[in-house]
Image 1 (cartoon, rainbow, N blue to C red):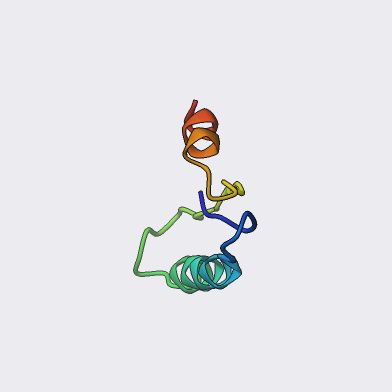
Image 2: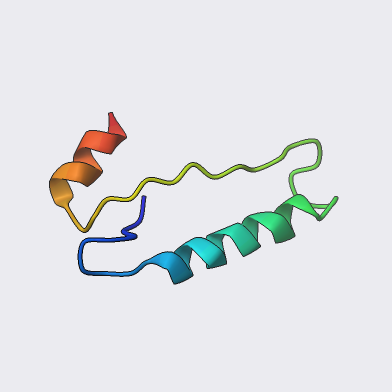
Length: 55
């Protein structure tokens, strides 16, 4: 979970996470036969939203 709105722009974190997943998924020597995927949610810099989305 990362904030994409609510006073803090985490879009750079999203790009970095996507790049990391792409790099890992393209390598055959790391987690062979697996594909990592990312599910993200905008927490809006809110503790309540972060906790609610964990359930």
